[in-house]
Image 1 (cartoon, rainbow, N blue to C red):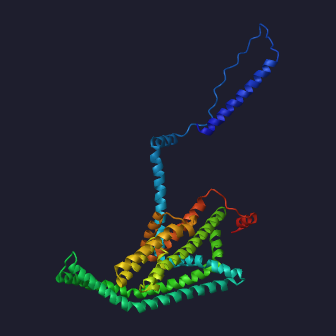
Image 2 (spheres, rainbow, N blue to C red):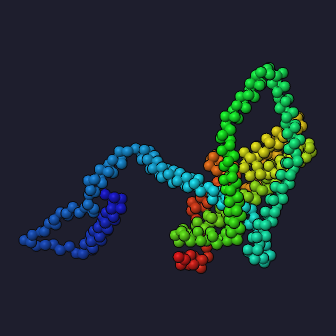
Image 3 (spheres, rainbow, N blue to C red):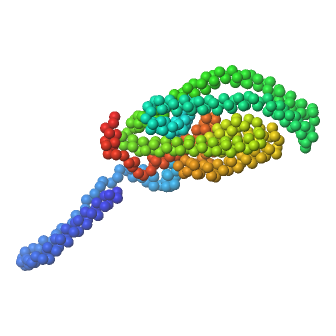
Length: 428
């Protein structure tokens, strides 16, 4: 008997008991009639047993419930979690394969989203100045392209001008290393050094074919890069101009009951992305200026390229900062020696500690705070899937998903005006 049927039976017994008490009270108030002697006294028949409230469960159901009862609760819980995790894993694997198959399209779209989050405030300023949306978007995009092109031109010119001097110093450094291998603790002879050099040359000769095939595929790579750049430009323009309209179209594809919750989650995720991009640009600028000051003071070559590398490396948290700092230290070691290299290393560590413990918590705040383990695992996974671009988009993607999932699972109803609810209900 189920719990509901038990409660119904108790209520029925209580109702019958109440009726019986009322009848007995009425009987006590009425005069008792004494029957004649010759009148037979009727003895009430014993009450019939109450009919069962529900039919017994079928045999197969009782056997199934008995089998479930024999299985330990922990095992049943583990089995329920297991098949659900298997389904989620299969769906995730299919999504990863799909993204990998169309990564030529997905990567430019991801970069366009980051650029849109960075340039959206500028477009908002021009819109408040009463400029048309298309004109404001075009002005912001053209100014951004001009700034990027000017910076790249300056970096390339300085790099080309400083390559001969650095190459000569690198040659001197190689000779110094050879002398150290001879006179140092290893005490290698000329024959041993020549043997290792010949082995390296032989390895290069044996892998010439693979190197040549890689060079032959450069044309296809350049074509993909150019196509991706054009897609980034077009996607950024339309994201800046029609981003809200595109999002509303996507939300209308969902069921009516889920539209407001998804719209609220998407708005919060976009705010998180904008905050992350702004904070990352500001932190990268401070890192580049801080390390660049030391590079200028000690007259390290390739100052502008190294500053640009530090700025770009800051977009990959933890890993990018370490790699860009290591490049700056190596250039200082080749050009100025190990003493100046140690000074630059100390400057890089100081700036990175300032970034990790002061700038990021203060600028980014809790809205985009992610555990360092999640950052490292995300960067490693996305770097394997999509290379350098995957490492760049890993952390903002994790931050956006974190915010969206929290909003979707929150036990609250997003606030919406009544007329908007009516419009959403009538929408196709």
